[in-house]
Image 1 (cartoon, rainbow over the protein chains, first blue to last red):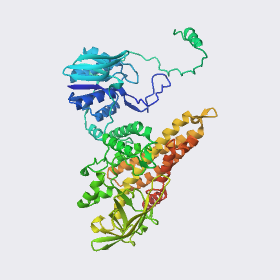
Image 2: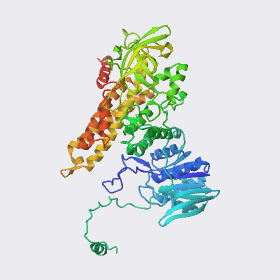
Image 3: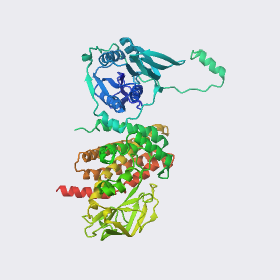
Image 4: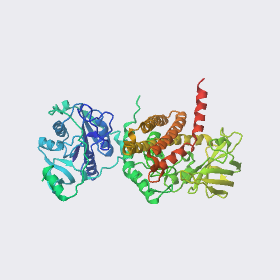
Length: 249
Length: 384
């Protein structure tokens, strides 16, 4: 089975994100970027499946400007076989990415597409679901465990009231949650091998996908600074405030 | 002209950095007894190094290593130096410290010394410094005199790190005191249990390591233990020390970077007289100077390493890197200490350890003044 893994380049999770002065977005110039942590979990899962002989090829795909190549190279150093870079300078919305991935899937014919459940920059949590709908494939989102038996992919999902287990028929789209695995460190020999692995460039035009943004960002602002709390003397006072000030009771 | 690390070196840097942040820094204050790495951590770090594929990275492929170049070693050394989890001396992360000189041995000697070192079965130490010959090896007084198939060695070596645990010493001696460093110094491999070799004094140092003084009295060594030809020792030693100087520079970069990380984070938290330290110009200037100097040093060290890897002559860049980076690391560690104030003097933080290490780098393996002397000599020879 071939596994297609989508990866996204985002601001490094350890960096403090700053809003641009004009409110048009967050500052990405001169900011350290890295692979989205949930995508890293997806790459790790695919590489493990390849090591266990379940997958025979792991293909990475990323859409974005030139430096997305670095993110792909990181995934190749973790053990993926090859990569596809959809080169574009356009702002990409989840629907556009889902359409691009669907077009790549039509070319590559994978048995499973693995994605992070969401990217830590926009926290949309939409691409995987949209992709499954566009392809008409089964979907297993928020996976904390994936097992494969023949054509059946069993996914344990982390949902609000516990764990839900679903059985999907291949081909399917699976999105990864935090507890699925712990991504490995890229080893030095694999880093050197990754240098020789291919990253094939493609454009949205070549894939026949219209990526024109449908949304307009009006403004981006910092979350309001948290105000200091107060100490109350009695429980009655607390109830009074919850009822009359916060309006939550 | 690109000033960026090649992509694969960038990846290597990221991966090691991540490892250091998550696996070394959190335990850095409890891994060592004095300067000796506790056995359980030695085991963990060796296993982790293998897991990261860094084991024997700088050993040539023909001897079972990975044959990575100087830049790769610099990148890894820089990141590992961001923590005090490993002792600053004698505690490599990438496997046994194989001294380049061992690759020069005859096949028979390689079997007896090089391979056992690579396998971790034997340990060596390096003996050049003497009571009256530190940075000036030409004036060394330890001599080797040929008698038939043997050499007879007499003299004293001082400040020999790791001599207590060593199975053998890579010993630099004078075979012709007239010639000094111009063809008068020869290198030998001497087993530490050879009759006449005695460890006499052990020194306590501010860095914590305890080097030895070794006395050689009528020590008889087979002629086959000579490395290279008679009189070639200084040249061979220089070759080994050349790459070692860049390692020095890399270590200084790591120390400085971590000290900057610590001082900026502390300056933003610490409030005195109603203001954070980071709001005060005196502190800002310390941070700015440190960052600028680190940037300059990094460019110098990376440039020298890239030159070494491309086979170009890099000795002058090596001297400059060691001199500038070591001096820089001490200034930065000192500012980091100043920004933290009293807490930096305690062993609750790694700053005092970085500070002591950085101070010692300005002296060991070629003092800054000696570096400047050689740099000036090269300049005067080239210009005017």
